[in-house]
Length: 113
Length: 112
Image: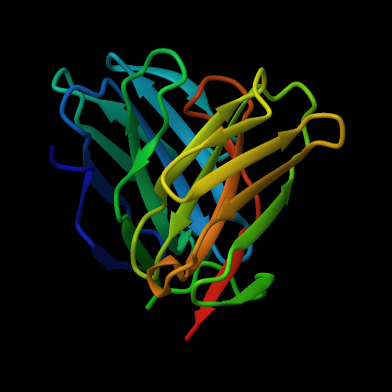
């Protein structure tokens, strides 16, 4: 079974621009979550989508948004980029019920200049 | 490779020895815990999980111990190998099983 796939692998953007990151979950997984990883703050939860609905949200500003499609694929958008948004953005999927663990992709490395 | 943390605690062990990585969690109401391994340039990889109604769970070469009294979690790796070198994170559930709170991580270095 293929793992969680994230595209692109690397991105360089300028302050003020916006960016869209994509994620394809493991086949059969209905829940997709996004995390931000930085050296200073570690891994922080952004949001979770299940059956095209946002089920949970972390403490990030409204510039961070996401969506999930009917095939469970997900996108994350960051608008009006700031230098502090530079990070590794990780997508993770799970079956969506019970205590099934999260399985992560290898992330998208976003650099904001 | 990409750094996941600039000042992580580091555990150095010799190949073949057993490793014990410790983690203190914050929420006494947490009921589900996971250990992840992250290698340079990759995302966290699931190792093993445990629910709060258990105090021990074993996998292949790994054992997780949970002490709810002192809010402590540990990961034991038997016969540590060079391929075990990575950063290890514990995570606790604070809502649905997708909303995890991660620890700061421990870097495991395996020496030959």
